[in-house]
Length: 126
Image 1 (cartoon, helix red, strand yellow):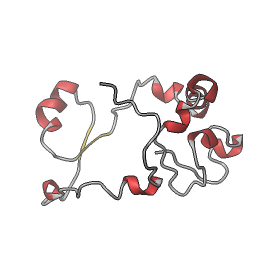
Image 2: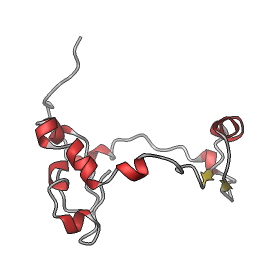
Image 3: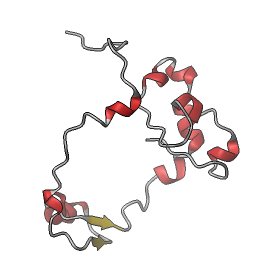
Image 4: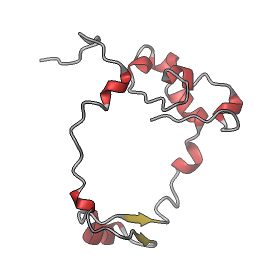
């Protein structure tokens, strides 16, 4: 069976996507008064002590050495999601505008350079 439908039978407004989510169970956070801050922890130590504990943790040096910090920028994603490469698919991607005024990913990646570099009106993609 192929369940890849290209068109929806009934289009719902984008704001409705979060309206039909089940309620969140926040009981795991009862009694949490502090957040553990860690550095220099191995993946094995993290998994053994924290990964499945529901204890909130901030690993302060977790991104050191990540190539993504040097390579991922606005131009990287604009090229990756370009209409030339993705065609109509770019319009089918889930996009949350959050008060940006940008109605689609296509509008995001066509914004002017000043705004793209965060010196214009703020924007967010989610």
